[in-house]
Length: 281
Image (cartoon, rainbow, N blue to C red; front, top):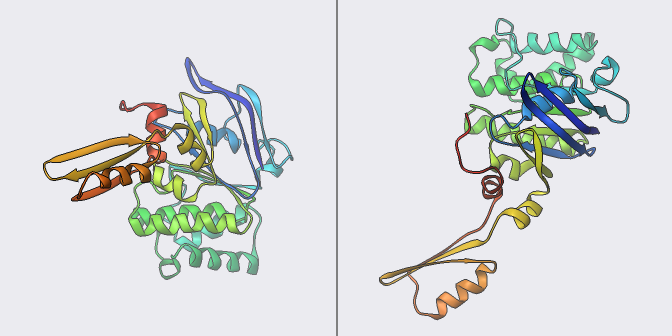
């Protein structure tokens, strides 16, 4: 559905994307992870044709470049910076975006109603977007990206600054898009979200691809060992191991344990191992 072939993009002396190659398959949720400044948003902009690569190519569904308007119609984008008109109501925003894609009449009315129901905003359809909470705006932003029923949806930090209920609804919507045969590229800082919804994950740093695979593959390759902690009378024992179940059995054989816990590696531990723990601003 989306092929990035050795793309590069620089802004003056700053290299934002450096020889990135990715192939996103039809019907998958593809996670794009990386610390601040890794090049994720620039990659998103290149993928939808908002920016032209300095070198390399972007191809959508084998049909050509997203700089071609006919190809770009197959893409839906929910940018990190909300793309909404605060003075318009939710329904008016969706009608506007629908008309930009040539949808009119009863078909547009039906589509607007469907999307408002999908994102849980039917009862606030006549309220101005400027009066919405952060979570409501994010859900409307996603609805606007879906109005023309695109084959490929790109979501750049779609849950930034939202409440837990809105985050849960957005993640459910991402899974629903995949279940209906759509393809999603999902950029996020939240490792637990990527672990929950993404079929495959790419980790970027300083514009380069540094890891690619399913969550389970990355954890197995890069996550490190499990940590078993056992508390006995007067002693706490911590053991790093590749076989935590066997280690628990060994510890239990030593005597009565007051508590036992197993900390298994997860996507966050993979991310920190690959990108480091220093702060990025």
